[in-house]
Image 1 (tube, rainbow, N blue to C red):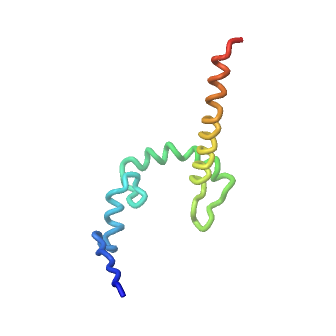
Image 2: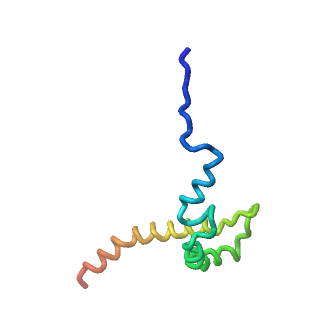
Image 3: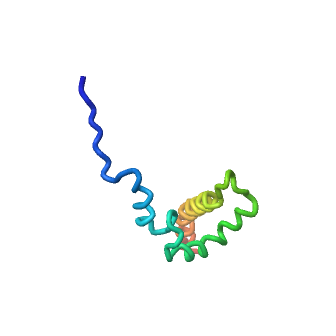
Amino acid sequence: MAEIKVPACPIPIQNTKLVMSQAHPTGWFNPHVPITPVLDALTRPFYAIFRRFIPPIGNVDLSPLFVLVLAQIALILLDNLAPLVARLVQTPV
């Protein structure tokens, strides 16, 4: 039988959290990154709409998920409406 050799991991498992906390720019692991308050101020109004109606489930806030789904639906609608608007603008009255 052939042996399967697993390559060694270049980053030890113990140091993974340390590396990710230093590398991730938005501060998911490090809340003291300077851009975190800016991103929080920009996203808080959008999240507040859903936080009024959807409670956290197991201490997990689902409002970002709903904001992303709603934004994706809006992008799909705009993408489908753009050719229609272009035809209406080009059509002489």
